Image (tube, one colour):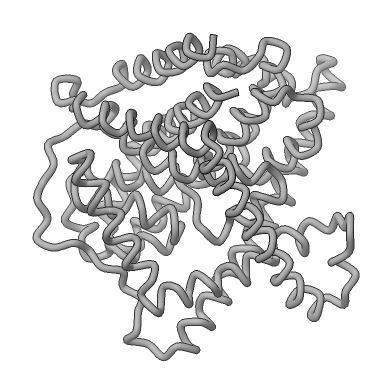
Amino acid sequence: MNFVFLLTGLALVFGIGWLVSSDRKKIRYKSIGKLFVLQLIISFICLHTSGGINALKGISAFFSWLMLQAAGGVDFVFGGFAIKPGGSVFFLNVLMPIVFISALVGILNYIKVLPFIIKWTGWALNKVSGMGELESYFAVSTAILGQPEVFLTVKDQIPKLNEQRLYTICASAMSAVSAAMLASYMKMVPGKFVVVAVFLNILSALIISGIVNPYETEKDDELVKISKGNDEPFFQVLGTYIVDGFHLAITVGAMLIGFVALVTFLNNTFIAIIGISFTDLIGYVFAPIAFLMGVPTHDIVKVGSLMATKLITNEFVAMGTLHSVAGTLSTKATAIISAYLVSFANFGTIGIVSGSIKSISAEQGRYVAKFSLKLLLGATMASILTGTIVGMYF
């Protein structure tokens, strides 16, 4: 039965992708096939072997440990009331640790650990898939650095990219999540699904881009390099990352206040007018998609509601809702929706992506604005593909 739903999920993704494809004759089925097989191998090792399961447990435990270390700084500044067993101050316990994680990312970037990982992982991915040197590099780097910072690493290349290549890197940016966010995500959804989704989303974005926006790859003159490095004093770089992390936490907090309040308003308004909440209503709209992904029938409306919530608001709002209702969902439904939520595919991210590109090149920013809805569709299909593959093992 799991294999059947893998086929239905794939049929959904590839069918929609083929219908909206800009050039069906250029779809490179061989490269897409290689990436899909790689996804199956990664997911099998991570979710179906003792070594992979133990590795995921170790990674999750490590991020939990990092959250405890971050609690030291938060506790010192905010007086100790936030860091308590069973504490529920979301901003302090979930968002503020982003500052610490961002500092660690800055240190690893400064001492050239991250550039080394990104360079050679991207090189290996390009050798396997043939999707392009720049595209493979960017797909890996965006999963570590996040946006909008990741666009600065290819700021010299962005003005030179054609519309097709620009679509691919923007789709990667929307389908991935930054390393600084992982620990916060793990406070709301099972850590193993967060880690697996990070790996799979890198490949899902390239697969969907290869269908929706196919083109012949070009040989780059040189592999792009991360712009931040040892040319700046260490403490200046560290301070920049810390402030950036704080700004990110504040921004996410502000968006959550606005979006959660908006959803609450819509729910109460819809209940008063038609007797059903807004989230339940959109849950019915997305329920068929959840079913094709393999979600058990009795969970499809709840999962569909979470899928729509993420699309309309952001992943944090949806994860917060999932955290509160996880006990009512089956294991399979929890696995699928958890993996699905680990990406930046939502309406708000379109503004961030287009704004980031426009700040580097006004002309390229206009291109992004032109295909923004198609970009959101592609990033959402990438999340559907990732969720479908994870669900196959439950």
